[in-house]
Amino acid sequence: MSCGDWYLNFLFYKWYYHPSLCPFPHFHCRRAHTVTVLFILTCALVYVTLLEETPQDTAYNTKRGIVASILVFLCFGVTQAKDGPFTRPHPAYWRFWLCVTVVYELFLIFILFQTVHDGRQFMKYIDPKLGVPLPERDYGGNCLIYDPGNTTDPFHNIWDKMDGFVPAHFLGWYIKTLMIRDWWMCMIISVMFEFLEYSLEHQLPNFSECWWDHWIMDVLVCNGLGIYCGMKTLAWLSMKPYQWQGLWNIPTYKGKIKRIAFQFTPYSWVKFEWKPASNLRRWLAVLGIIFMFLLAELNTFYLKFVLWMPPEHYLVLLRLVFFVNVGGVAMREIYDFMDDPKFHKKLGQQAWLVSAITVTEFLIVVKYDPHTIMLPIPSLIIQCWFLGILLILIWTVWRFFIRLCSSCKTIRL
Image (cartoon, rainbow, N blue to C red):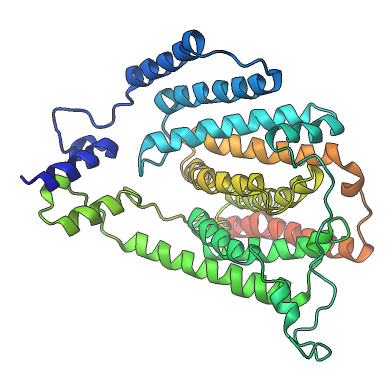
């Protein structure tokens, strides 16, 4: 074996986990290295205690103590927490995000128990630039696609709205499609959120957009293209053969590199078949999933509004990255719980935490700015939503009670 082969296999061993395909059969590739992590952690604490001089800065020491406490908890969770449904690229990766979910929920609970002033000023400890009210950008205004009055650039309205949120919309819906794995559910959530923006633009100016911004740029272009690419990726994953080889069994460098890249794809594939109309339980569960998705989307806008965070702030981006990593696990756990309740007798840990986080975020919004939340909704909006909810209730009663009773009578006859 050449030095290059040995080195590639060594790297492969460092992060590969599946025991049956381990390049070194006499080792267990899925070891969590609990003793190693404990030893390194102890050495770090000994260094801080005996060799490092503690700064005489109370605020700095408080921040460092909180960060150190979180890191110790993450070390514990990565080595000791229960594995979830995902194992690629490594189970420790998903255990890490499970622990981050716990930390984030605890942070939200802490913010919820503060006064409005103290909670907003606490954000200064994270970033000194925060804690000051910010103007909300209005995307409405002049909605002419072609503005003849502007001879220099008659399409300036389109270019003004082409900001960083355009690729974020596309990427976000691409990832959401990989989570939900259903074209109809994705389209329903996409369209419903635009209706929510119409309904709540009297509360947040950020929701005020031109009609073509709502339906052409968002639903058709950004969201639609993201959903399309996501469905194409799902089709490729469902048809891809999942026959894994150990790295040593692959003769070429190209094959080894391809095998390493495939480590970041699923070990096996589960196609989601939600079948919402099959029974009342699944129908209510799908409605609940759509509701929680929409609430989490709304929380993104309302949280930055009540906590005075600009849209481009890194905390807003970190929250989106967080939901990207935990949302897929939560959806898989919800699907397993719905699909086989006898085997999965309780809701998965990540799904439970994500649900708690979504509710806690909404409660923070309600506490920190009840005036905005309680602004009266226009009567036309109320009538439209009442009509929509009434139609859903009528269809539910017809589908699962009236039609079901009729079918039972036919079978008896």
